Length: 90
Image (tube, rainbow, N blue to C red; front, side, top):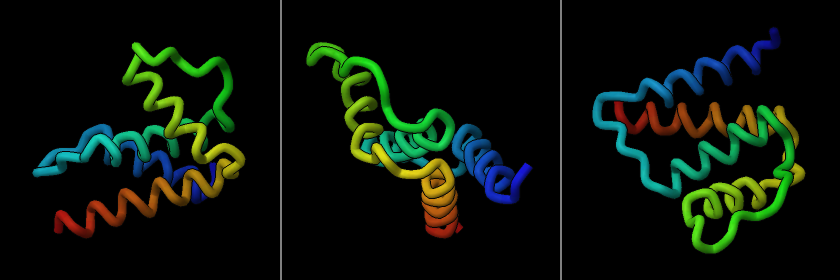
């Protein structure tokens, strides 16, 4: 496993088990979601959810914004975002 993938997996685990005052905004949650999906699945696919499906539509749109970003770039951005948040909490 590459060093980047290892760091990414650790960052994902940090977000999933976040405690200690970590209250991400909806925008931050969407950014983490979109970067995770781009890193693990690649570009968004499928039909955009309807306007009454607000949550899934927001997720789809966030992911679609970074269409074309490489998986490695998405992993690195995710790691950088987690480190930035961790730095603010310390």
